Length: 174
Image (tube, rainbow, N blue to C red; front, side, top):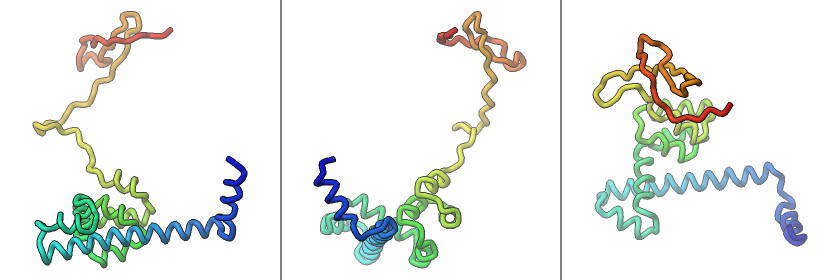
């Protein structure tokens, strides 16, 4: 780094502590969250008064992509002001993650109580995968496989399940 850049950094940082930067950053995040809520509330009010057919015109008029404005509106519609205020420590993105979920209030409560990140909330909001396929039948568990190193073949370890060998392309490094 050239000498003059290091001096500029020191001048910019002069008078601010690490905590000051954190506080300023949190304030900015809150402002950004508030803007998303405000855009969503505006789009929701517009939709209720004018209808959704003209929402693309509103988006174009204010310079926001229609998909973004719809997302803002949908999140605002899913969470009335009382719910937002109950979870003030959560960002708008937390609410976006669960807006379409049936158990959204429970997920928000857990995210709030357990201090979940948006990413953690997204993972926890995903439905649990079951071992059911399209026809509704349960998929049997995978059999335990063993390797016959001499033959270089995999076989099912439990002969009651299946005694056939399973061919595999494999290279064994001795």
